[in-house]
Length: 501
Image (cartoon, rainbow, N blue to C red; front, side, top):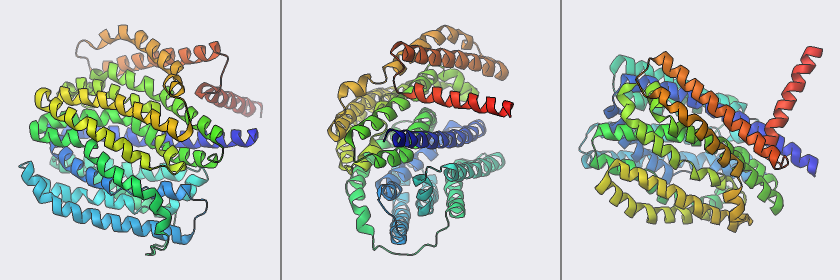
């Protein structure tokens, strides 16, 4: 059993590494796109698109069907399961497009900007395309083969980069941002059928198989969608497009690490959790180790970005965006609390308790709505940032209670489990704080890159050294450090074997 568990853990680790690498490459392409578009366009251009995107993302979230997770959780899958999943996604896509067509004109009237009519309609193509990706791609995930997923996502990002940059260069129009949003899922749709051929057939014979995964999830998405984009929609009414563009850009940059860590580890964790769901202790251990790993990577990344927000913004977007740096710094800190409970989605899906999402969403709605109104009306963007920080802490705390309810993992273990990562991050922050003076005066691009590299290198070195010293001090317990040590040892052995051969 121990050998089987180790094999499963190694396969899950490799799968997660590939997925994280995929997300790193994809987000790297996103950053390149942001760099170019940020320098060719103005914050006001991003502001107008942010409103349209908020509307589209709310409708998409409400109608999101987590069918991939449901397919992974099924003990066996047949052609009828895939046909039913495809048909449900097709119905969802057509319904989504119809709703956005109906909403486009009222939204334009509310924000007194008729450009939103065509933007909302056009952007609706993106979520509709995402839903029609070949359902058979889950077969690769079940076999821990995530290379096709990497290729599909990178192809989409490359298409978005090339098309948007060309349009921005030729027109300097906000439509280049919309083109990027649309081109990516369409390309992913086409490439997915190259890797996972599937002949679509309309059928709903197995829809009841998915209904238990959709009942509470769909209801919770209707609630969470309202709170997810509430700040952007409300800001669109109270601040100008320039200010909204600054906030939107900072929010997107702050969310990148979390999207890499949490978003792309959901699928391999769902597979890993499903394989041990019959053993509560093993499931509890698997969940706990996953959150420790997320914290070990996410904590130093978010703190480093927060401390170096201004030079990061200057490097990525240029001097005209530097006023967004303070927003990025605070929003990066707001992304830390969710790391302590970032594996809830695959866990709840595995134990068939997706109703917890509705409960958490309602709690967030009741807390966030009044705070958001007060914060925005009286304090503007700083008020919105403060609300995000409060909500992040509150909902993460509630999530820990939910995890205790689902698998019995103690609150103390959840909160104090990542203590080595927390302490190492604090040591890293203390080490790089004296280096912040390097960014006090405007610098050339080369000097800025050099200084950020130095600060990043010092931070990474101090953090990794602290993690391994603390790990050694407590007797080398099982954790992310052990996995890294094994991977390094394996790499060294391979190099020696190659040299010996």
